[in-house]
Image 1 (tube, rainbow, N blue to C red):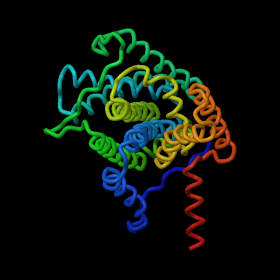
Image 2: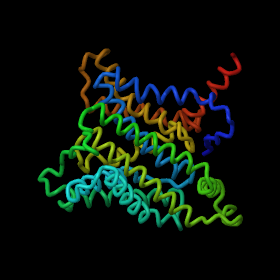
Image 3: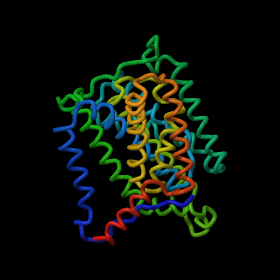
Image 4: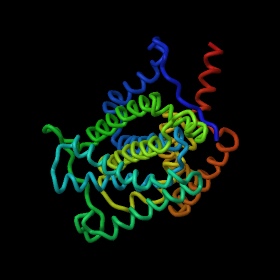
Length: 342
């Protein structure tokens, strides 16, 4: 599958990036000031968490060509690691985040070892084992959930330097800040030497090895960094959005959601993760509102969820056939046509 790759910002004309600056300005100032609590809670917080997970998976799959179906497992590792670090060590929030990301990176590194010999479908099956193993371990051993009878635990309060992140606005700003900083870091990573090596391995592993690319090291670094980012996304999903930490919140469906995000949004482009996450988050809400408007709430929620999956599957097939480069490529075409018409 071809991919639309983000290009380096060589031009010194920073005015060309005013749309990004405008989006960040609206996100950091406009949304907290004017957006209703429902928009922050039900749309923006899950959007940010899933977009960050998409950024992490896109680094591995879009840029590196390593297929993974275990994203939710690494999200769970990040969330449960943060919960236990806060519960048992009570460390400052930045250190908790760093240690939970490192824990997810270590687990990702273990399950990334098969990538040294496997690729394609076989590697996908190998990463799928991570999904089942992590869910089994979190359910089997009560220590992870502090021996909660139900296995569902409330996320502890977040605070740092005397500032509490319990309010909706504070949780949103925390999530937005983390997503922005990590995305900028991933952009720098993909446009550096390791990013070039990763793309070379994706395009032709044998040729990359011939020209001196350290294939094994690069693959393992990609798995570790990707898993660390997805682990932070799991922290955001549990601590800022759901406000609970439970294995059921990181099931196989969540892994497929993250995979669909990068397929619909566009492989090997950071914009694609955000475009795909927006569609994945907003689409179910729109379908629910539309069914309530047309059928007056007569459709069962289970049937509605099934219809949602069918439509989403059709959309994915349509994108793979009509526009395999996803929403990012469509956006690029619209921008080029608009520029020609001005």
